[in-house]
Length: 454
Image (tube, rainbow, N blue to C red):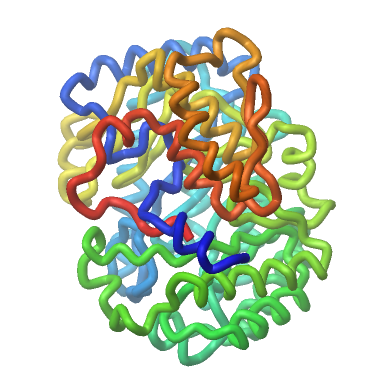
Protein backbone atom coordinates (compact mmCIF):
# COMPACT_ATOMS: atom_id res chain seq x y z
CA UNK A 1 0.00 0.00 0.00
CA UNK A 2 1.41 3.36 -1.02
CA UNK A 3 2.65 5.50 1.85
CA UNK A 4 1.01 8.57 0.29
CA UNK A 5 -2.42 6.90 0.51
CA UNK A 6 -1.81 5.98 4.16
CA UNK A 7 -0.75 9.49 5.07
CA UNK A 8 -3.64 10.98 3.13
CA UNK A 9 -6.34 9.07 4.99
CA UNK A 10 -4.73 8.53 8.39
CA UNK A 11 -6.91 10.96 10.31
CA UNK A 12 -8.82 10.78 13.60
CA UNK A 13 -12.14 8.99 13.13
CA UNK A 14 -14.84 6.98 14.96
CA UNK A 15 -14.93 3.18 15.07
CA UNK A 16 -18.70 3.30 14.54
CA UNK A 17 -19.93 0.87 17.15
CA UNK A 18 -22.97 3.15 16.91
CA UNK A 19 -24.40 5.95 14.84
CA UNK A 20 -24.53 8.63 16.01
CA UNK A 21 -21.25 8.07 17.83
CA UNK A 22 -21.32 8.76 21.56
CA UNK A 23 -19.68 12.24 21.39
CA UNK A 24 -22.48 13.30 19.02
CA UNK A 25 -25.42 12.15 21.09
CA UNK A 26 -27.98 14.89 21.61
CA UNK A 27 -28.30 14.47 25.36
CA UNK A 28 -30.33 17.65 25.87
CA UNK A 29 -33.43 16.16 24.22
CA UNK A 30 -33.11 12.77 25.89
CA UNK A 31 -35.24 11.81 28.89
CA UNK A 32 -35.53 8.71 31.06
CA UNK A 33 -39.14 8.27 29.89
CA UNK A 34 -38.06 8.41 26.24
CA UNK A 35 -35.76 5.48 26.88
CA UNK A 36 -38.58 3.51 28.53
CA UNK A 37 -40.98 4.29 25.66
CA UNK A 38 -38.57 3.22 22.92
CA UNK A 39 -37.52 0.17 24.94
CA UNK A 40 -41.12 -1.00 25.15
CA UNK A 41 -41.75 -0.22 21.48
CA UNK A 42 -38.73 -2.20 20.32
CA UNK A 43 -39.48 -5.08 22.70
CA UNK A 44 -43.05 -5.35 21.35
CA UNK A 45 -41.74 -5.40 17.78
CA UNK A 46 -38.95 -7.95 18.21
CA UNK A 47 -39.18 -10.14 21.32
CA UNK A 48 -41.32 -12.89 19.81
CA UNK A 49 -39.54 -12.90 16.44
CA UNK A 50 -35.83 -12.51 17.20
CA UNK A 51 -35.46 -12.07 20.97
CA UNK A 52 -33.05 -9.61 22.55
CA UNK A 53 -29.36 -9.32 23.38
CA UNK A 54 -27.87 -8.76 26.81
CA UNK A 55 -24.47 -7.19 27.36
CA UNK A 56 -23.29 -7.57 30.97
CA UNK A 57 -20.32 -5.46 32.02
CA UNK A 58 -18.15 -7.05 34.71
CA UNK A 59 -15.64 -4.29 35.51
CA UNK A 60 -13.15 -5.77 37.94
CA UNK A 61 -9.52 -6.57 37.09
CA UNK A 62 -6.65 -7.58 39.37
CA UNK A 63 -4.14 -5.46 37.44
CA UNK A 64 -4.11 -2.56 34.96
CA UNK A 65 -3.35 -3.25 31.30
CA UNK A 66 -2.05 0.01 29.86
CA UNK A 67 -3.46 -0.61 26.35
CA UNK A 68 -7.02 -0.91 27.67
CA UNK A 69 -9.70 1.71 27.14
CA UNK A 70 -12.48 -0.10 29.03
CA UNK A 71 -14.27 1.05 32.16
CA UNK A 72 -12.70 -1.01 34.94
CA UNK A 73 -12.01 -1.11 38.66
CA UNK A 74 -8.62 -2.49 39.70
CA UNK A 75 -8.74 -4.62 42.85
CA UNK A 76 -7.55 -7.92 44.27
CA UNK A 77 -10.44 -7.95 46.76
CA UNK A 78 -12.89 -10.59 45.56
CA UNK A 79 -15.44 -9.62 48.17
CA UNK A 80 -16.66 -7.11 45.56
CA UNK A 81 -18.16 -9.95 43.52
CA UNK A 82 -21.37 -10.69 45.46
CA UNK A 83 -22.62 -7.09 45.78
CA UNK A 84 -22.02 -6.49 42.09
CA UNK A 85 -23.87 -9.63 40.97
CA UNK A 86 -26.78 -8.68 43.22
CA UNK A 87 -26.84 -5.17 41.73
CA UNK A 88 -26.84 -6.44 38.13
CA UNK A 89 -29.70 -8.81 38.91
CA UNK A 90 -31.58 -5.95 40.57
CA UNK A 91 -31.12 -3.87 37.41
CA UNK A 92 -32.38 -6.74 35.27
CA UNK A 93 -35.44 -7.21 37.51
CA UNK A 94 -36.32 -3.51 37.03
CA UNK A 95 -36.16 -3.98 33.27
CA UNK A 96 -38.30 -7.11 33.40
CA UNK A 97 -40.93 -5.31 35.49
CA UNK A 98 -41.12 -2.60 32.79
CA UNK A 99 -41.59 -5.08 29.94
CA UNK A 100 -45.04 -6.54 29.19
CA UNK A 101 -44.01 -10.16 28.82
CA UNK A 102 -41.14 -12.53 29.53
CA UNK A 103 -38.01 -11.61 27.54
CA UNK A 104 -36.58 -14.18 25.14
CA UNK A 105 -32.79 -13.88 25.17
CA UNK A 106 -30.99 -14.54 21.90
CA UNK A 107 -27.51 -13.33 22.89
CA UNK A 108 -25.56 -12.81 26.09
CA UNK A 109 -22.07 -11.38 26.16
CA UNK A 110 -20.04 -11.06 29.35
CA UNK A 111 -17.49 -8.28 28.89
CA UNK A 112 -15.20 -6.29 31.11
CA UNK A 113 -13.04 -5.65 32.89
CA UNK A 114 -12.34 -9.30 33.38
CA UNK A 115 -15.37 -11.61 33.53
CA UNK A 116 -13.16 -14.48 34.72
CA UNK A 117 -12.26 -12.35 37.76
CA UNK A 118 -15.54 -13.73 39.13
CA UNK A 119 -15.84 -17.18 40.71
CA UNK A 120 -17.72 -19.92 38.88
CA UNK A 121 -20.35 -19.84 41.65
CA UNK A 122 -21.01 -16.14 41.15
CA UNK A 123 -21.13 -16.48 37.36
CA UNK A 124 -23.61 -19.33 37.78
CA UNK A 125 -25.73 -17.21 40.15
CA UNK A 126 -25.65 -14.37 37.61
CA UNK A 127 -26.83 -16.43 34.64
CA UNK A 128 -29.41 -18.41 36.63
CA UNK A 129 -30.65 -15.14 38.09
CA UNK A 130 -31.08 -13.68 34.60
CA UNK A 131 -33.25 -16.65 33.60
CA UNK A 132 -35.47 -16.36 36.63
CA UNK A 133 -37.15 -13.64 34.56
CA UNK A 134 -36.42 -14.75 31.00
CA UNK A 135 -36.35 -17.62 28.50
CA UNK A 136 -33.57 -18.77 26.18
CA UNK A 137 -34.12 -18.41 22.46
CA UNK A 138 -33.92 -21.69 20.57
CA UNK A 139 -30.74 -20.72 18.70
CA UNK A 140 -29.16 -18.63 21.43
CA UNK A 141 -25.52 -17.54 21.30
CA UNK A 142 -23.80 -16.85 24.62
CA UNK A 143 -20.21 -15.61 24.75
CA UNK A 144 -17.68 -14.27 27.21
CA UNK A 145 -14.24 -12.70 27.36
CA UNK A 146 -11.62 -14.77 29.16
CA UNK A 147 -8.25 -13.67 30.51
CA UNK A 148 -5.78 -16.49 29.73
CA UNK A 149 -3.97 -15.96 33.05
CA UNK A 150 -6.99 -16.52 35.28
CA UNK A 151 -9.49 -18.51 33.20
CA UNK A 152 -9.73 -21.95 34.79
CA UNK A 153 -11.02 -25.24 33.46
CA UNK A 154 -13.86 -24.83 35.99
CA UNK A 155 -14.78 -21.43 34.45
CA UNK A 156 -14.97 -22.91 30.97
CA UNK A 157 -16.90 -26.00 32.07
CA UNK A 158 -19.44 -24.10 34.17
CA UNK A 159 -20.17 -21.50 31.50
CA UNK A 160 -20.48 -24.27 28.91
CA UNK A 161 -23.04 -25.98 31.16
CA UNK A 162 -24.91 -22.65 31.33
CA UNK A 163 -25.20 -22.50 27.53
CA UNK A 164 -22.06 -20.61 26.48
CA UNK A 165 -20.46 -21.83 23.27
CA UNK A 166 -18.22 -18.91 22.32
CA UNK A 167 -15.21 -17.56 24.19
CA UNK A 168 -12.72 -14.84 23.28
CA UNK A 169 -9.24 -14.75 24.82
CA UNK A 170 -7.24 -11.53 24.97
CA UNK A 171 -3.79 -12.28 23.53
CA UNK A 172 -2.62 -8.85 22.23
CA UNK A 173 1.02 -9.87 21.48
CA UNK A 174 3.47 -12.59 22.59
CA UNK A 175 6.57 -10.40 22.71
CA UNK A 176 7.86 -10.14 26.28
CA UNK A 177 9.02 -6.58 25.61
CA UNK A 178 5.59 -5.53 24.35
CA UNK A 179 3.79 -7.38 27.14
CA UNK A 180 5.89 -5.65 29.76
CA UNK A 181 5.14 -2.23 28.23
CA UNK A 182 1.38 -2.80 28.27
CA UNK A 183 1.44 -4.57 31.66
CA UNK A 184 -0.13 -7.72 30.24
CA UNK A 185 2.46 -10.43 30.85
CA UNK A 186 1.10 -13.84 29.86
CA UNK A 187 3.13 -16.67 28.32
CA UNK A 188 2.01 -18.54 25.21
CA UNK A 189 1.42 -21.74 27.17
CA UNK A 190 -1.33 -20.02 29.19
CA UNK A 191 -3.19 -19.14 25.99
CA UNK A 192 -2.59 -22.61 24.55
CA UNK A 193 -3.87 -24.24 27.73
CA UNK A 194 -7.19 -22.38 27.83
CA UNK A 195 -7.67 -22.78 24.07
CA UNK A 196 -7.20 -26.55 24.26
CA UNK A 197 -9.47 -26.75 27.30
CA UNK A 198 -12.21 -24.86 25.44
CA UNK A 199 -11.90 -27.20 22.44
CA UNK A 200 -11.94 -30.26 24.70
CA UNK A 201 -15.09 -29.09 26.50
CA UNK A 202 -16.87 -28.42 23.21
CA UNK A 203 -16.89 -24.68 22.55
CA UNK A 204 -17.83 -24.17 18.91
CA UNK A 205 -16.26 -20.72 18.44
CA UNK A 206 -12.98 -19.81 20.11
CA UNK A 207 -11.60 -16.36 19.41
CA UNK A 208 -8.28 -14.62 20.01
CA UNK A 209 -7.86 -10.84 20.19
CA UNK A 210 -4.61 -9.47 18.77
CA UNK A 211 -3.52 -5.83 18.58
CA UNK A 212 -1.13 -4.18 16.14
CA UNK A 213 0.54 -0.85 16.78
CA UNK A 214 1.44 -1.54 20.41
CA UNK A 215 4.49 0.16 21.97
CA UNK A 216 7.83 -1.35 20.91
CA UNK A 217 6.03 -3.77 18.54
CA UNK A 218 8.02 -4.77 15.45
CA UNK A 219 7.25 -6.86 12.38
CA UNK A 220 8.98 -9.92 13.84
CA UNK A 221 6.72 -9.64 16.90
CA UNK A 222 3.58 -9.67 14.74
CA UNK A 223 4.89 -12.61 12.69
CA UNK A 224 5.68 -14.57 15.85
CA UNK A 225 2.27 -13.79 17.37
CA UNK A 226 0.36 -14.77 14.20
CA UNK A 227 2.38 -17.97 13.77
CA UNK A 228 1.73 -18.98 17.37
CA UNK A 229 -1.94 -18.11 16.89
CA UNK A 230 -2.14 -20.23 13.74
CA UNK A 231 -0.71 -23.17 15.64
CA UNK A 232 -3.74 -23.04 17.97
CA UNK A 233 -6.28 -22.54 15.14
CA UNK A 234 -8.86 -20.33 16.88
CA UNK A 235 -12.11 -20.14 14.93
CA UNK A 236 -12.07 -16.36 14.68
CA UNK A 237 -9.72 -13.46 15.32
CA UNK A 238 -9.95 -9.78 16.09
CA UNK A 239 -6.79 -8.16 14.69
CA UNK A 240 -7.23 -4.51 15.41
CA UNK A 241 -5.37 -1.27 15.78
CA UNK A 242 -4.19 -0.03 19.16
CA UNK A 243 -6.19 3.11 19.91
CA UNK A 244 -3.85 5.53 21.64
CA UNK A 245 -6.24 7.97 23.35
CA UNK A 246 -4.49 9.05 26.58
CA UNK A 247 -6.42 12.34 26.56
CA UNK A 248 -9.55 10.26 27.29
CA UNK A 249 -8.23 7.43 29.42
CA UNK A 250 -5.67 9.32 31.48
CA UNK A 251 -2.66 7.61 33.04
CA UNK A 252 -3.84 4.16 32.02
CA UNK A 253 -2.38 4.72 28.55
CA UNK A 254 0.75 6.62 29.61
CA UNK A 255 2.92 3.71 30.69
CA UNK A 256 5.20 4.42 27.71
CA UNK A 257 6.17 7.38 25.56
CA UNK A 258 4.49 8.44 22.33
CA UNK A 259 7.68 7.80 20.37
CA UNK A 260 7.54 4.12 21.43
CA UNK A 261 4.37 3.58 19.40
CA UNK A 262 4.60 2.55 15.71
CA UNK A 263 3.04 5.15 13.41
CA UNK A 264 1.82 5.68 9.85
CA UNK A 265 3.36 3.32 7.28
CA UNK A 266 5.33 1.41 9.96
CA UNK A 267 2.14 0.66 11.85
CA UNK A 268 0.23 -0.23 8.71
CA UNK A 269 2.98 -2.63 7.66
CA UNK A 270 2.41 -4.52 10.93
CA UNK A 271 -1.20 -5.02 9.86
CA UNK A 272 -0.45 -5.94 6.26
CA UNK A 273 2.12 -8.56 7.28
CA UNK A 274 -0.24 -10.04 9.86
CA UNK A 275 -3.19 -10.04 7.48
CA UNK A 276 -1.20 -11.81 4.74
CA UNK A 277 -0.20 -14.51 7.23
CA UNK A 278 -3.82 -14.98 8.24
CA UNK A 279 -4.88 -15.28 4.59
CA UNK A 280 -2.17 -17.90 4.05
CA UNK A 281 -3.72 -19.93 6.87
CA UNK A 282 -7.23 -19.74 5.39
CA UNK A 283 -8.66 -17.01 7.59
CA UNK A 284 -11.10 -14.74 5.75
CA UNK A 285 -11.58 -11.04 6.35
CA UNK A 286 -14.94 -10.30 7.97
CA UNK A 287 -16.01 -6.70 8.42
CA UNK A 288 -13.47 -4.36 10.00
CA UNK A 289 -10.46 -5.95 11.74
CA UNK A 290 -12.04 -9.41 12.05
CA UNK A 291 -11.08 -12.73 10.50
CA UNK A 292 -12.67 -16.17 10.65
CA UNK A 293 -12.31 -19.70 9.37
CA UNK A 294 -14.96 -20.85 6.91
CA UNK A 295 -16.36 -23.15 9.59
CA UNK A 296 -17.16 -20.27 11.97
CA UNK A 297 -20.62 -18.70 12.16
CA UNK A 298 -19.11 -15.23 11.61
CA UNK A 299 -17.97 -16.25 8.11
CA UNK A 300 -21.35 -17.78 7.31
CA UNK A 301 -23.21 -14.64 8.42
CA UNK A 302 -20.88 -12.43 6.36
CA UNK A 303 -21.50 -14.56 3.26
CA UNK A 304 -25.26 -14.54 3.90
CA UNK A 305 -25.27 -10.76 4.55
CA UNK A 306 -26.71 -11.25 8.04
CA UNK A 307 -23.62 -9.97 9.90
CA UNK A 308 -24.53 -7.34 12.51
CA UNK A 309 -22.53 -4.81 14.54
CA UNK A 310 -23.46 -3.11 17.79
CA UNK A 311 -21.87 -2.08 21.08
CA UNK A 312 -20.83 -5.72 21.63
CA UNK A 313 -18.92 -5.75 18.33
CA UNK A 314 -19.71 -8.05 15.40
CA UNK A 315 -22.30 -10.78 15.83
CA UNK A 316 -23.57 -13.46 13.48
CA UNK A 317 -27.22 -12.52 13.97
CA UNK A 318 -29.16 -9.30 14.50
CA UNK A 319 -31.35 -8.37 17.41
CA UNK A 320 -33.17 -5.06 17.30
CA UNK A 321 -33.03 -4.63 21.09
CA UNK A 322 -29.85 -4.81 23.16
CA UNK A 323 -29.95 -4.17 26.90
CA UNK A 324 -26.71 -3.33 28.68
CA UNK A 325 -26.44 -4.26 32.36
CA UNK A 326 -23.76 -3.13 34.75
CA UNK A 327 -21.74 0.00 35.31
CA UNK A 328 -21.09 2.09 32.12
CA UNK A 329 -23.04 -0.34 29.86
CA UNK A 330 -24.85 1.06 26.83
CA UNK A 331 -28.28 -0.14 25.73
CA UNK A 332 -29.75 0.15 22.24
CA UNK A 333 -33.48 -0.02 21.48
CA UNK A 334 -32.71 0.78 17.80
CA UNK A 335 -34.68 3.99 18.27
CA UNK A 336 -32.55 5.32 21.13
CA UNK A 337 -29.37 4.70 23.11
CA UNK A 338 -29.00 4.85 26.90
CA UNK A 339 -25.81 4.62 28.95
CA UNK A 340 -25.45 3.64 32.59
CA UNK A 341 -23.48 5.70 35.07
CA UNK A 342 -19.74 5.04 35.08
CA UNK A 343 -18.98 5.13 38.80
CA UNK A 344 -19.70 2.00 40.82
CA UNK A 345 -20.91 3.86 43.90
CA UNK A 346 -23.50 5.86 41.93
CA UNK A 347 -24.60 2.69 40.14
CA UNK A 348 -25.34 1.02 43.48
CA UNK A 349 -27.10 4.13 44.86
CA UNK A 350 -29.53 4.44 41.96
CA UNK A 351 -30.43 0.75 42.09
CA UNK A 352 -31.11 1.04 45.82
CA UNK A 353 -33.64 3.72 44.85
CA UNK A 354 -35.24 1.27 42.37
CA UNK A 355 -34.12 3.38 39.40
CA UNK A 356 -32.43 2.26 36.21
CA UNK A 357 -28.89 3.68 36.53
CA UNK A 358 -29.02 5.69 33.28
CA UNK A 359 -27.30 9.05 33.06
CA UNK A 360 -27.40 9.96 29.37
CA UNK A 361 -28.72 8.86 26.00
CA UNK A 362 -29.81 9.83 22.51
CA UNK A 363 -33.12 9.61 20.68
CA UNK A 364 -32.45 8.76 17.02
CA UNK A 365 -34.06 11.00 14.41
CA UNK A 366 -35.41 9.74 11.08
CA UNK A 367 -32.18 10.96 9.49
CA UNK A 368 -30.10 9.13 12.10
CA UNK A 369 -31.89 5.87 11.36
CA UNK A 370 -31.16 6.13 7.62
CA UNK A 371 -27.50 7.03 8.12
CA UNK A 372 -27.18 4.25 10.68
CA UNK A 373 -28.32 1.69 8.10
CA UNK A 374 -25.71 2.87 5.59
CA UNK A 375 -22.89 2.77 8.13
CA UNK A 376 -23.94 -0.70 9.30
CA UNK A 377 -23.99 -1.88 5.68
CA UNK A 378 -20.49 -0.51 5.06
CA UNK A 379 -19.13 -1.98 8.30
CA UNK A 380 -20.74 -5.39 7.83
CA UNK A 381 -20.95 -5.89 4.05
CA UNK A 382 -18.45 -3.38 2.57
CA UNK A 383 -21.25 -1.93 0.44
CA UNK A 384 -24.43 0.09 0.72
CA UNK A 385 -27.28 1.15 -1.54
CA UNK A 386 -30.06 3.73 -1.78
CA UNK A 387 -31.94 1.79 -4.43
CA UNK A 388 -35.05 2.00 -2.26
CA UNK A 389 -36.50 5.39 -1.40
CA UNK A 390 -36.43 4.60 2.33
CA UNK A 391 -32.59 4.56 2.23
CA UNK A 392 -32.22 7.85 0.34
CA UNK A 393 -31.32 11.15 2.03
CA UNK A 394 -30.93 14.53 0.40
CA UNK A 395 -27.20 14.88 1.16
CA UNK A 396 -26.24 11.84 -0.93
CA UNK A 397 -24.87 14.00 -3.80
CA UNK A 398 -22.57 15.72 -1.28
CA UNK A 399 -21.48 12.34 0.09
CA UNK A 400 -20.66 11.09 -3.41
CA UNK A 401 -18.70 14.25 -4.19
CA UNK A 402 -16.62 13.61 -1.08
CA UNK A 403 -16.07 9.97 -2.11
CA UNK A 404 -14.88 10.76 -5.65
CA UNK A 405 -11.28 11.18 -4.48
CA UNK A 406 -11.42 7.78 -2.76
CA UNK A 407 -12.75 6.23 -5.94
CA UNK A 408 -9.81 7.73 -7.86
CA UNK A 409 -7.50 6.16 -5.28
CA UNK A 410 -9.09 2.74 -5.89
CA UNK A 411 -10.74 2.44 -2.47
CA UNK A 412 -14.34 2.11 -3.68
CA UNK A 413 -16.61 1.98 -6.71
CA UNK A 414 -19.48 4.44 -7.06
CA UNK A 415 -22.50 2.86 -8.76
CA UNK A 416 -25.77 4.36 -9.97
CA UNK A 417 -27.49 3.88 -6.62
CA UNK A 418 -24.82 2.74 -4.18
CA UNK A 419 -21.14 2.18 -3.45
CA UNK A 420 -18.94 -0.89 -3.03
CA UNK A 421 -15.66 -0.91 -1.12
CA UNK A 422 -12.76 -2.61 -2.94
CA UNK A 423 -10.23 -4.91 -1.29
CA UNK A 424 -7.77 -2.00 -1.30
CA UNK A 425 -10.38 0.13 0.45
CA UNK A 426 -11.24 -2.25 3.30
CA UNK A 427 -8.56 -0.82 5.64
CA UNK A 428 -10.18 2.60 5.08
CA UNK A 429 -13.78 1.63 5.91
CA UNK A 430 -13.84 4.10 8.81
CA UNK A 431 -12.87 6.93 6.46
CA UNK A 432 -15.60 5.93 4.02
CA UNK A 433 -18.19 5.84 6.79
CA UNK A 434 -17.12 9.34 7.81
CA UNK A 435 -18.38 10.63 4.45
CA UNK A 436 -21.89 9.53 5.51
CA UNK A 437 -21.57 10.89 9.06
CA UNK A 438 -23.67 14.04 8.76
CA UNK A 439 -23.37 14.91 12.44
CA UNK A 440 -19.57 14.81 12.28
CA UNK A 441 -19.52 16.93 9.13
CA UNK A 442 -21.88 19.55 10.56
CA UNK A 443 -19.83 19.97 13.70
CA UNK A 444 -16.16 19.05 13.49
CA UNK A 445 -14.66 18.20 16.90
CA UNK A 446 -12.85 21.07 18.60
CA UNK A 447 -10.77 18.72 20.77
CA UNK A 448 -9.29 15.24 20.38
CA UNK A 449 -12.13 12.69 20.37
CA UNK A 450 -11.10 9.74 18.21
CA UNK A 451 -8.11 7.53 17.55
CA UNK A 452 -6.40 7.52 14.13
CA UNK A 453 -8.18 5.51 11.44
CA UNK A 454 -5.05 3.70 10.20
